[in-house]
Image (cartoon, rainbow, N blue to C red; front, side, top):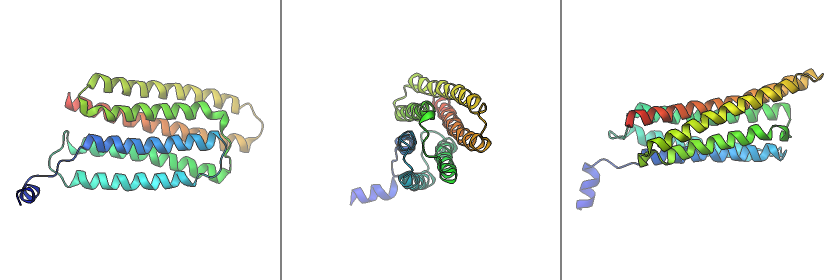
Length: 206
């Protein structure tokens, strides 16, 4: 009986930082799967859409929990913005897959370095969310700065590939591949933005 009374009176304790970490992990799984599919040249990308749908459901659940509580480790808006930026990463992946399916260009092994950089970026971002609750703020910031560094490397790789692409004569191929590359750059930008939001949470807590 006492346990039931506590459940009615006391607010449910939710580990919001762990929820953010789990959301970032679901995003990481999507990007890892995307890299695997297109580096190997597999046109069967249905699983990516399934993973995106699962991430959407997880985000919905996490936002409902956030909305229903009064006590959070940092202001609700900061946590909500982190979910928004994680969602934008997933949306950008979805946009890339839609473009690839429209152009029917599935062999993207030439862009393996960009895919690998995206995987490294999301790995560092997720690791930052994982240790956020440990109050090791300097370590979290190191993860954030590594994301920014990797984004800079990806921009350089993007420019190098684009310069080579523009030397070709097939205008249709140039335009299609430019759009694919631009969307990959957009995913990286979204990861960078999310790292900035994680940095904002750190500054609010420190």
